[in-house]
Image (cartoon, rainbow, N blue to C red; front, side, top):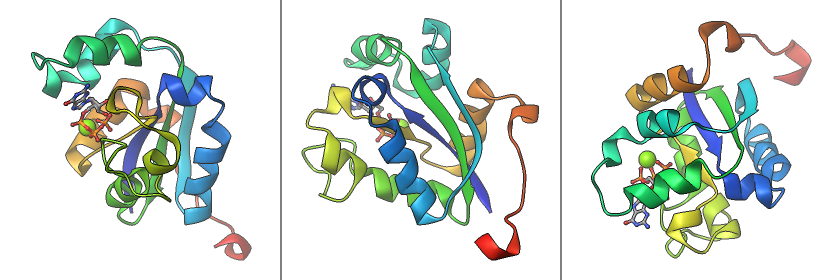
Length: 146
Ligand code: GTP
Ligand code: MG
């Protein structure tokens, strides 16, 4: 199985959507392996979004992602990276299909509710920003819940 890093961005927390979004992932069958609420420092945000440094939207992106608490989690399962990206919908909510998280809850790119790692390599890099190894809990499901 595979790990992926999901962030429920400050707008998701403000709008009280966290429970709903986590429930979608649980129903899908992904396992929660780590979970916390925190407010990103500018340094953490710069590390997270290093690939976008220098782009026109970068300052607004850092301001947005540090504007309030986020919920960070590690989700685990077969093809977890791709499954989460599919469930999130397109980056621009204008293009996100109904039934996806961004399609159901967001209207503008600058407030698009959720982040999910875009590859296994990104996931490993991003998980290390938010969680220590000890905070990632590996467990198996009891037979009756599989
Ligand atoms: P994340 O999961 O947040 O990384 O989104 P993504 O992988 O779907 O998109 P990407 O990594 O390309 O961009 C990161 C974030 O920057 C997006 O979620 C948007 O909030 C923002 N962003 C990306 N491109 C643009 C843009 O052209 N304009 C604006 N205003 N914001 C953008
Ligand atoms: Mg991205």
